[in-house]
Length: 527
Image: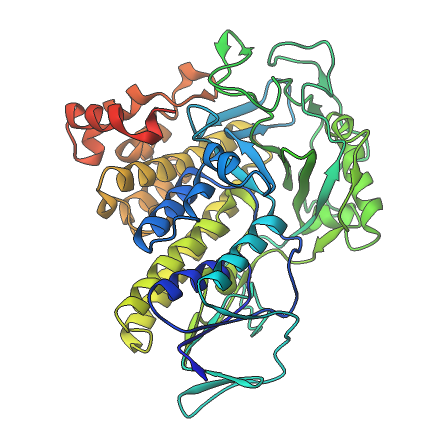
């Protein structure tokens, strides 16, 4: 038979698109060169991403997808799937007391999650099959050509093809992101990783804490290619990896959530590290660094040796991994970022995940892919997959979002050596993300077009003006600051304060009374 749609790649994006296409009545061929379950990164979710999951589940009648949108429903409906609790975003710098905590939910039941991708991707493949997709695994493409209006894929034919393989795996034509630093990464899964508090026994409050000096060999790249940090602070002690509301204290303020129950980040000159704990005792951890630091760490050499050299430079992090053992092979990415030359062509398009990738920072890849799926679904629903104009618009939108994310994450890399500057930079992400979520939840998605307000020229102009010192941070984010961000009195500890949301009603073109009524009855606000 000739399929309406062939999807190459059965990661979460490809499988989810297959589910949506089946709900829209299309015949779907799903091809996978490997098999499931398998390791993948792209594990940490966000409020906006989980809202997109909800929207897809409701719009396309996918009730079994919906429980993945919150930690509480996940644990209730799919306890067999690996998951971790993500109450917020936790950041640590290299100087004593440098930390930033930004809550993403008011409690555990409605919290975001870390996905154990081996489990989740396998689950989604099985859901696609149950909905009628024809799935073939261990099927590398020995033939993929488009002739006579049909794709010939080994022995199969299809009218349209979607590349869901990931950056450059089906067609490699990387043109890179202009001005973006070359970065590399090393990562794996571990058992025995301690929480930040466990690495500093006896400390019961947040910093100021003793400084833990870097090893003396931590210098910039030869020839002055990188900055020279002088010392590293201890990681923040914290409460256990579960719990609700505020737990612990810091400089006299309540901690908005247990700091380890989060996506934990360590930022330092030249790069950053992530630590994502799962409920089953496994922890996903890795680091992304600029090429000058990768060279110093000899990242292209033996993986375990590079990991140990990295830990040796940060004794506080090293303490967290004192008893850790990898349970997955080492994964090395010699070039993290990728930008395809095109997103669409004759009879095909790419998911955003196949069109480009920037960096794991802020977990931008999965929401970009979900937005792409929404746009592709609209084309399928209206039989417009072959429309040159609409495909060109899809390509332009995809590239605009990828380029904006690359620019923004590049600005974060430039700020890693200066933690206060980095904190200020993050405020643009949190302002855009929280505003976008609130706009969609209150029926005003028209106010937040594009990922991280890509299509809002004023937002991007304000970011550039702030970078150039022409606009204060407070003024730069004011039109979209619906979450009480950039508030010095909060001392870098941002909880979920619904009063801040209500006070920002005018930004969403609502009255305070209207927004208070929405908040009073919304599930997402009553956690």
